[in-house]
Length: 376
Ligand code: HEC
Ligand code: HEC
Image (spheres, helix red, strand yellow):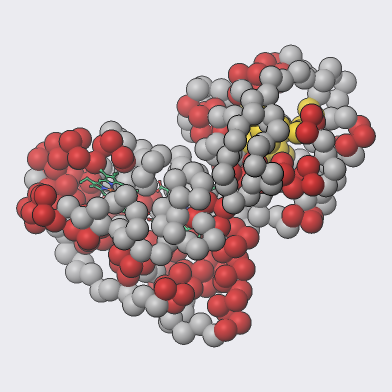
């Protein structure tokens, strides 16, 4: 197993490094372009100032510890390929996302240059430690933030295979020893000592099972004549929940009712009601799996172009229900834009739970051309 992982790591390293320019000397035009890409695609969750936690518990992208040790491959692959099972979707075109390889390269370099951080050269050797002792430390000290299986949610999913494939032992050790400035991740040097830290790193490494980027076969999205589900059906009647949120994408403080329980949406699908489902995540996430019949309408499309998808005119009275990952940032943003374009409150809603919870509840999703069990 170790050799397979080492091989995957090598292939990945040559794939990331091959023919790419990783110099940190972006000129003003490149800096401006990268800032624009960040604002359009990333600020929603990571915050306009990159300090993280604007939505979906997205981590900071400005801590010197992440930037100096994550450059370039950890950052580049996270952006290009995302982290499965989390709100971090893949942004590369080959995965169905919006960004060309050069754009991801530019963003990766910009993240360091804008903070004035220099990359650190970490040792390449494997860290030796006692994985069994490390597992105990993990359950006692780390599981309440990172999840008992490293599945994350409030803190990054450090059991995720793409993360483990890209994070060297030294990268993990550095994060544990130095923490991450400006975030809930503290330093464990004093508490655990070097031996204790090595044990936890050995435990995390023992959870890796190998990963390689898998380009997907991209599917064509539905055409406008296919948007409305059950065009002959009755209109659905949803119970909406109102919520007050202080968010950067807030329009008016108190949100009008907009949150519909997932169970009612499933019922409306089963009862063949007439409505439109919008998947507002990056299109790569729609490619991987989506709720049956959902139309991809990623949040990063220009606001003013919100309706170049040719949704039916509001006068046709078709209900529009949006969803994203966990649970509201992107879908709220898209629904606000549609409301600004004249789609009325009573015809626009958001699935309260998001698709991650939807899948965890065992509700149906489509992957590939066929219907599969939840969780894939
Ligand atoms: C109080 C909650 C909390 C605890 C406890 C905690 N962490 Fe973290 N950890 C975080 C957060 C939040 C981040 C992301 C910080 C950021 O924004 O960069 C993080 C980041 C990390 C990272 C970097 C992951 C990446 O994707 O770059 C590693 C590795 C890590 N933690 C390991 C551990 C281990 C091992 C323990 C236990 C010894 C632990 N953490 C305890 C909250 C926590
Ligand atoms: C919908 C919310 C969302 C959006 C939009 C988003 N991210 Fe993330 N991002 C996350 C979350 C959540 C994580 C942590 C995933 C995990 O558990 O490992 C993350 C992780 C990352 C990481 C890994 C950080 C680490 O500590 O290891 C990088 C790098 C990153 N995102 C960059 C970006 C960039 C660049 C963009 C825009 C192109 C972007 N993200 C857009 C939610 C988002």
